[in-house]
Amino acid sequence: MADKARPLSIQGEQQQEQGPVRASDDDVDRYVDDAPDEVLACRERGRHLFPTIRQAGIEFTGVDRDGLFIRRVTCTCCGLAVRVERWEATKRGRHLRYQRVASDLEYRKGPDGQSYQAPPGRGRMTPRQIANSVASRALQGLSLAELRRAAARTDGRNSGRNG
Image (cartoon, rainbow, N blue to C red; front, top):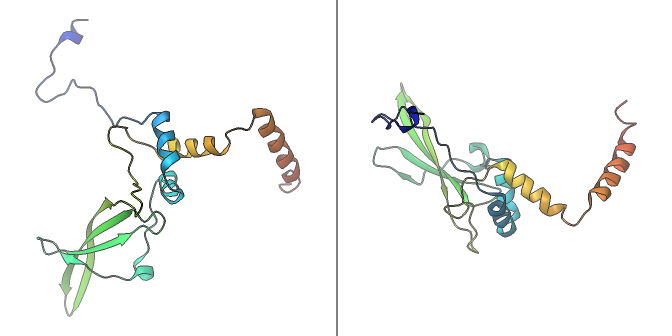
């Protein structure tokens, strides 16, 4: 019991690790109610769909203060996430070689004010929480008995296909 009263060291060795705070189910439900389907698809998947260089081409939009070329690529699903890539060019003999050395994500507002990110102070929303909320909304109003009957009918039709 005396250990609990001991002050924390300057280095913080006795501090408990604190990870990001998860959003509550109510906060996730409110977010899902207002978010467009494209945003929910990226949130549920847990990643964005950025086109490849072969699909989108490679065009640099600027040069940063370190001399790195900047390329911006927008998510083809939600349209609200922009991957900002920093590329370096090095000369190897007669040829130039380009390497992506860093990338970051930026989020922008949609034309109707929609946002990919949840309101500040709500905590982190995981892909599983988003999927759970979307599924709960889709199945709202159905009884468990109805769901079980429908699942049993589907299972009966599919049982001969696996053998």
